Structure formats: C-alpha cells, structure tokens
Image (cartoon, rainbow, N blue to C red; front, side):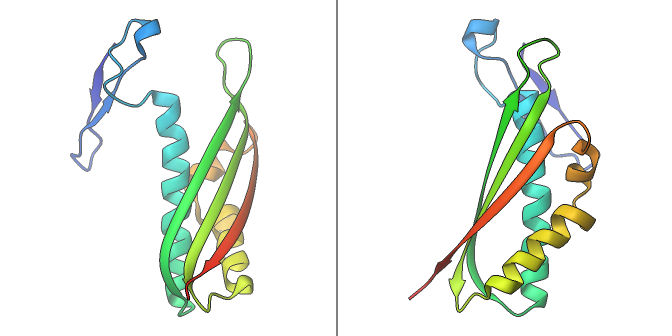
Length: 129
C-alpha cells in the first residue's frame, strides 16, 4: 500500500495507508495530500500578495480540514481553511484582500476543487509585540 509519487519537479512524495487498511503508515494518504496541496497553494499566494503589500509577516500557519462523504468514493463534501497570519502591524484589510484573491482568483487547487466540495475559509491575525 506504499507508493512513491514523483511529480515533474522530481521531488518524491511517500504515500501510504494506515495499519488498519493494510499499509504501514509511512506517509500521508492521497486525500490528505489533496488538502495539503490546497493549503500550500493558497499559502504561497497569500504570502506573495502580503509581501507586495509590504506587510511585515513573520509567520503563516494554515489549517485545512475536510469532511468526507459516508459512501464511496468518500469524496470531500466540505473543506474548511483557517489562515493564521503573524507579524508586526499587520493590516486586516491586506490579509482579507490577499486571502480573497487567492481563493477567488489565483489558487488553482481551490479552483479545481470548486463545485466538488463546499470550501469555506477564515483567518486570524496574531500581532507580534
């Protein structure tokens, strides 16, 4: 049940199933990687936009949670994304705009999943002292 995927970038990714499914739990599951990809795609957008807006971001953490259907193929029916932006004098308007642009214009993973799952997002800002 373990697979190693190598995309065109050449970076190998280990995938595996849990012990209860006959795997060895040595890597993320394919559906988990879908959520990780969504977080990474939107995170790169948000950081890029906030840098252009000259925001002093010191950290970005993204939590992505998916709710799966009960029946096979058990696709994600809902996905929640929470952005936690940390920095000095971070503008809430800049954060809101950056996330909105990512979610509605730039993130190709989100665009791919649209229509398949209900995707919602929220954010919080943690101001450094």
